[in-house]
Image (cartoon, rainbow over all chains, first blue to last red; front, top):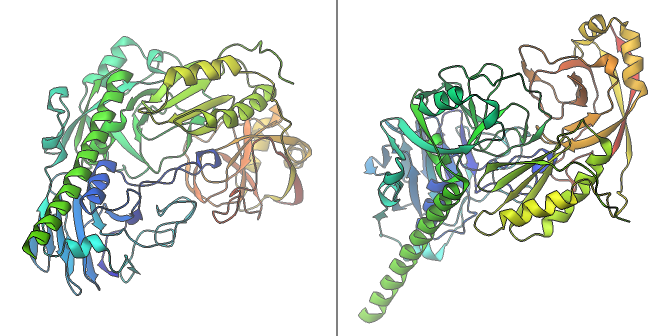
Length: 339
Length: 223
């Protein structure tokens, strides 16, 4: 069981998301940085729908009331377990009574606490993600507060197996071969890839160029619903009246203010503003990891390139799963030889 | 009995590597909506298709870009766009009781003034129509209703309100509906109802389904 000792206003329990209900107006929720949680769960050999805590505002402090193993992924939250440093992208065993503190990252915007076996809260509409709009799922449909307690599976055989075993993963920027594409997250400045949006041609060539060449500032008003970008005003050639239609995270809408918004996992399921572009699936985590006040630069790619980037990322996650399993098997073999 | 489609083909655009939007290029049409609702269910059998999300005379298809055949999805939707549904739909009529005006209907007076009608006339017009649920979206349980009398069409507010209570009856442009979750809204607020439009523990989780009809019944007008 985990007890919350201190938290900011936006720590929530999430999983890979709630899918299949967009046609009821129910969005996916889930993690803002899906890559970080896929890797975190893989490091713990969790089922890929295992639930975890997403921390957006720091510090965040918890006490563990039972032994387990955890993985910390996403931004470097300068974490400390009973005062001892734990780096980001590391998995470490935890003993009952230990306290974990996650502090404000110098770079990046969101950090994750993954737990062996996944966090145990009831599934609602097929998912443990928190729906903040309709206040259901996750921990009682709301962000965590001091004093909240929630459980995790007691004896997870892999956790016991891994007792005393500590290991880390390379940061995706180092592990993913995306440097060539110019993608990176560094010093709160990110470069991400976009595909042309449904209303791309409604914007003049000059405006399209302005969109792609500007350094957009991520507004302090950004949150799980969307990353509001500040920069030059973007106006379509003429006023467009659009009927409401489905949207997905990554879609970049341009409201009358001329300041684009990148939709994120808690966005409304339908929109009606002109869509100038969409951040590709593989780079949505980079938007989430650009700190408020940080900068975003955009590069236009084709749908084929977007699909290939996603394939590369999925292959990477599978590589992590394989490497971790191999590590466990090797340990088991070593033990058998010692007997 | 399906009949050959003579509808104009939809505009196709990508919202992501794994999402396509099919848009009508024609004025809003209730029959096209029925066709889209039927098509949205049919498409779910295609390999790799995860969700189909009907909008106002449009359809978003969400799929696994590594497993589905994007071109096959496009071909299927374009060839069946506008086809009459092969099955009759199972729709219902719901009556929603409304207290017009008062604290929840702060913009009722403004809507009346703008239309040149009295408050009572606005209420009478709003409560005498039968509306059609085109689709759900925006927030859990919210139904986009078609059929608002043109005399009541009112543009959205310049500045949205940061918090509008669930149950508020509102007008936004040429649309009307009931806000189903306490949330920000730029719509014109004209009244309130105490009906629940969404329950995550119910199956289906929403009171209204696309194709359903809605009537509003005036309980009283607070001025």
